[in-house]
Length: 368
Image 1 (cartoon, helix red, strand yellow):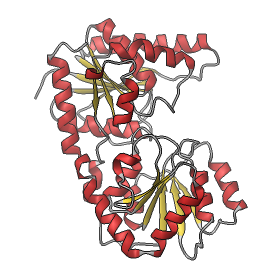
Image 2 (tube, one colour):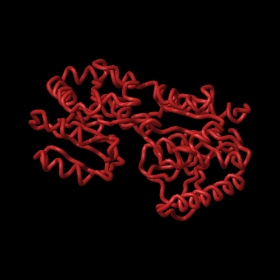
Image 3 (cartoon, one colour):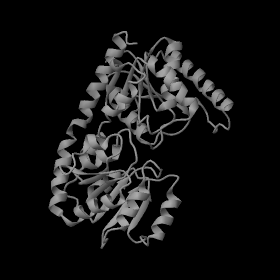
Image 4 (cartoon, helix red, strand yellow):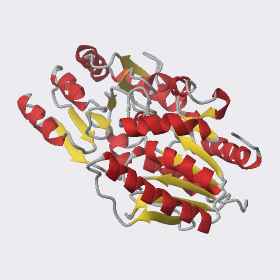
């Protein structure tokens, strides 16, 4: 076991995709070396962490900043606490996840004379931070020792201001908890499943409208998740008279039960970094239909081989694809079988090998 210590920095350990990926990576990496996770403020982890992982927070709570000056003061406070933690814990390498954590990781690493890896979690061309953070990313990202992205198109975007040889493609791993949860004997129900936060980015409004265009019969649409657009979705469901056919059950930790029992998976995003839910659905052998948004779906789905890809916001094409899957059990079986085979390369063992190699290289070599 290596004695060199690594730390992950991210705003919180809530229920989001980045938080889940950090949890998965940390739980595996701690088997090889000491691992610490640092968050901005206190809060119980949503996902289960290994007891071997040390947890620290930079402050007890953070209030939303009402001005640029307040935001600067808050982040200076976080940075000072972060530097103290890194020094006290004798951390050798910090890994940032999400925009603000990436910036703070790089600055803290320079102050502490340690290495920094940052991880880009979304499409920089679409998921634009505030002007404050946009300027800081441009100024600081080139000084990271290494940058990880999840897809080739995102690497191309980052290479405009980060040296290309400092960027690696490291996609998200499959959740290892799913290995024992995939049950092909679970009876399939007439369910079209979607999973994701209720935000503009995930574009569930288009999915609901597409579902409303087809003869539903006894099929149901279930959208697992929650967020700011819940009331808007509920009103749309009522307006389209789909109250008996569309369910919004909220966030679920036992998401595998939905993957096992659904017959179709639908993904409607406007943009992505890497679509975790789509990857998971394919692992469970679900036939999928997805928007061909930047970036991610086209790296998972070969159109009409292991799923359907349709243009973003094309409600008509999406509903046609759904209807084809509903009408043909044979097509669902073909797409589902091909999907599960095509995502084997995202198994945790393979992704962790790449992360360990990158961490070791970063610690040993003088990456700049």
